[in-house]
Image (tube, rainbow, N blue to C red; front, top):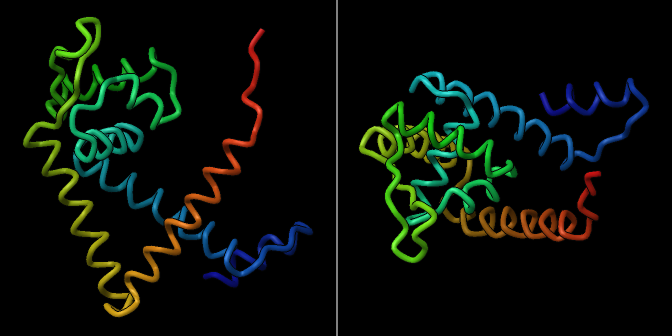
Length: 160
């Protein structure tokens, strides 16, 4: 399949390195898995990602979730409203700021995220030898850091 991704881009005149082609395939397969997990729990993929972030970020506010999802605060409020109505997230007053809320997952939200953790864990255990997991994790962190740095260097769009 990696060759298919790289070959497909060669036909368009775009040369991809093997790591970039592999990364693109990984992203696509991950997106498909997240969509399937979300469907299994009656959610849309962006909502599932929100539940996962809330699960791993205790006390996160809607603003923090908006930053993570790269959505406006109003769009994130709609996501939170859907997740609260569906029983995946709880909203409670923020004791540090009376104007905002803190978010937490419900039991249903935690179970949905646990399903994902089990699938990802099984995939890593199947493919990555135990003695290389730290190395693979460090590589993922390095790539994430490089992508974050590249994003930070981009000029944010200005809206008229």
